[in-house]
Amino acid sequence: MIEGLSKNLNTDLKVETGYLLISEPFLPDPNFERSVVLICDHKPDTGSFGFILNKPTDISVAELIEAESVQNTVFLGGPVEQNTLHFIHTFDTLEDAIPLKNGVFWGGNFDQLRIYADSGMVNSSNCRFFMGYSGWGKQQLHSELEQNSWIISKINLHQIFQIPPEELWRSILRTMGGRYKVFASFPDDPRLN
Image (spheres, rainbow, N blue to C red):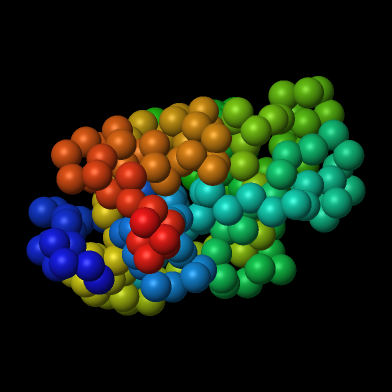
């Protein structure tokens, strides 16, 4: 950790479902380097679960499942169970979807989602797909927050569909202002500065 980041970045270490975790600029874990993670489930007594929002792959959903109408890019959701497919979306009519915040949902009836896709309703501005997920055991995330590994963001979740993935980390930090805006300008490798 560089000097000046040793002070606690998060004045409030409370995480809730629907919050974003922004990795600190020099997080040494390659799985989460400069990542933005959407928390989809958080229970301090059991753990937390979410998806990395800004690590697209070269794979389309159509390549993984029989749904040619779903051409969305698949994102790497995290290092856990990368053989599983998950999705978030803005369809409030999708059965069994779990509400997060700001009209964004996690999962739901996949057969119904295919019908939406066949009618041209599913695209990158309203639905994201993930291989694998990010998970934390009991109190693990709280410990990482205390170590300044993550910055908590409470932005309106609709923005995650509007900002290009490669700009998401920097854009959210800039929006947060103050010292976070400075973090957004840090080079990927400070030795090259």
